[in-house]
Every structure is written in structure tokens, then in C-alpha cells.
Amino acid sequence: MMTSLPNLLTLSRIAVIPLVVGLFYVPEAWAAYSACSLFAAACITDYFDGYLARAWEQESVIGKFLDPIADKLLVAATLIMLVGFGRLTGLSILAAVVILLREVLVSGLREYLAGLNVGVPVTRLAKWKTTIQMVALGFLIVGDYGPREIPVTVIGITGLWAAAILTFVTGWDYMRAGLKHMTAEPARPPASAKQARSA
Image 1 (tube, rainbow, N blue to C red):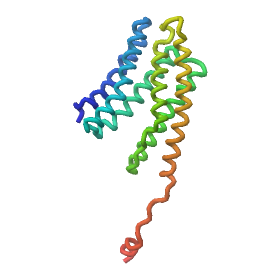
Image 2 (tube, one colour):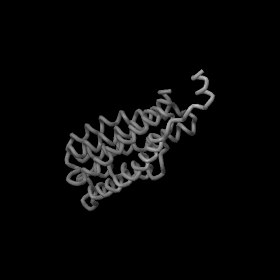
Image 3 (tube, one colour):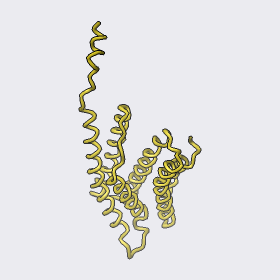
Image 4 (cartoon, helix red, strand yellow):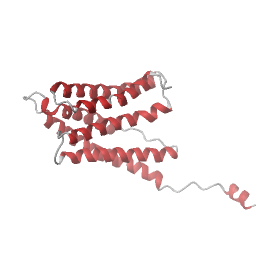
């Protein structure tokens, strides 16, 4: 049900997006750190909503639907704002493009396979990708407002490229798994069913 704690945590991840986006328009260090804190809190809920849903046996259809969407909305909004405000420039934008395209690909693949009643399990490598990606985005949100003695932007960009490489690898793995089902021959009805129809 919608009011269960796991679902509320998922919804909070969506609700925080306008706040993170709005803070980009405030050219102050406190705004950058606030946006990073909200982003980090949203990322933490990504772990706890799934964990609590399984531990409390509160897994629901709406939760399974909203959870991946919340993640993709948060990541897409953050990447767009980073590019729009010049915190992600040059060739590094390609890493963002790879990540966004992979999200679209996997979403379409999940939708297609759901029609076949086939699930797409999340691999351990994909979980590492998500972790590295979220940490990198947190660094990039702070950007030049970070301490001068720490190369915050460089760390963020390096992490984003690492996430983009893992994104490409995991996206290809998902695509191969999906192609097996797409190219599989449809099951033939048993001979008795054919004879019944012909009769």
C-alpha cells in the first residue's frame, strides 16, 4: 500500500528532486552543500526502501514500479542540471549521455520483458555502478564550492567516467539477456491442440 514506510521512502526520493534542482539556482556554497545532502539522503533511501520492504514483507506492485523510476528521475535531473550550470563540461558530458541512454534502454527492456512475465534481476556489478555513480554525482553537485585542498570536481568526473564504463558493461549484459527472449521462437502448441483445431 502507498502509506507503507518503504513506499513513503521511495516517494520521498521523487519529492526531493525539485528541491535539489531549485538549489542549483542559488549561487552559494550552502546551497551546493544542501543540494548534496538532500541528494545523499535520497540515495540512502534507495537502499532502505528495498531492504525494509523485504524484511517486513511489504513488497508491493506500486513499490516495484516506483523504485526504479525514482532512481532514474533523480539521476537524470541531476545530470541535466550539472550540464546546464557548467559543472559538467567537455568530453565529460559524454559520460552523462552514456548513463542516460542506458537508463532509457534498461527501462524499455524491463517494460518489454514484463509483458512476457520475465524479470530482469539487478546484478552485483550494476549495484556497484549505482554506488559509484551516486558518489560521483554528489561530488559534482558540490563542485567548485568544495575545499580548495581537495580536487572535488576531478574526483566527481573520474567517478562519473568509471560509472559510465560500468553502465555500458551492465547495459550490454541486460541487452544480451533481453535479446535471448526477443529472438526465442514462440512455443508451439502441442499436437493434440492442433488436431482439435483442425477437427
